[in-house]
Image 1 (spheres, rainbow, N blue to C red):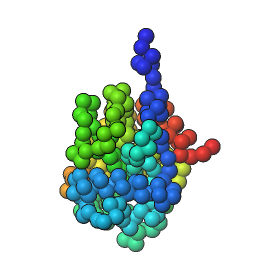
Image 2: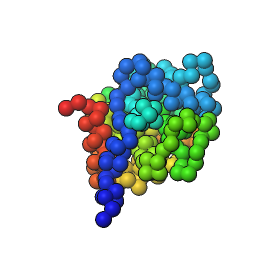
Image 3: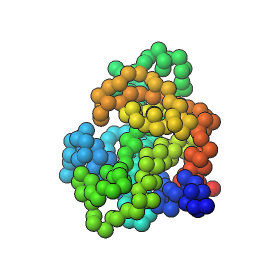
Image 4: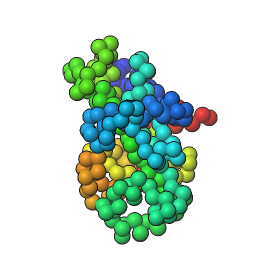
Length: 244
C-alpha cells in the first residue's frame, strides 16, 4: 500500500509548515507583511504605504499566529484574535466598528453573551505564493525562482487557511474567549462546514474587503463537531504554540 495514502493531515502539514505565536515585533511584522501583500497589493482593500505593512488600532491588543513554510522560511499565513474589554459602545470589535449595519441584532441579543468571553477572529490571510495551484509557475506578483514546490507540497497549501483558523481556535480556548465572531467570505464557512465546524450566520452580506458576512461559533461547538483528522491537526497546532 502507498505509505503516502496513510499519512494524516498532521503528517503532511508538519512536513512543510510550522505554526507559531507572533509575539515579537519582528514576528508581528511578518504577519503585517502578509496582510499588506494580500489586502493592499493584491486586492486593494486598504491603501498602500511606504512601510509595506498592514496593521490597525486593534493589533496592539490582539494575539497573532503565523504559518511558516519550513524550507524557505517564508511566512505563508496569518490570523489574529481580537478581544474586547468593555461594551460595544465603549470597546467595539472590528466587525462592530466597520460592519454594524450587517448584524442581525435579534440573533446577537438572544445569545446573551458575556463580553469578557467574546472575541473576533480576523485578518486571516494566506500569501498568494501559497495559493498557487499545481502546475502554475508564478503568481500575480511573481515569486523567487528558487521556490519550486513539489506537487505533494502544493497539495498541502489548501490546509494553510484551515490551520490559521485552528490556531486562532487554540487561542480562543487558552484565553477563554470562547464566544467567537468572524467576518468571512462565503467560501470559508463552507470549507469549515465540510470539516464539521458549523458556523451560525449572524447577519447579512456586506461589501467589506469583498463580500463578507458575520458568523458566530463557540469554541466548544467547534471542538465537539470537528472531524477526527482535523482534531488531530488542532492538537498538533496547540502543542506547537502553547508550550506544555
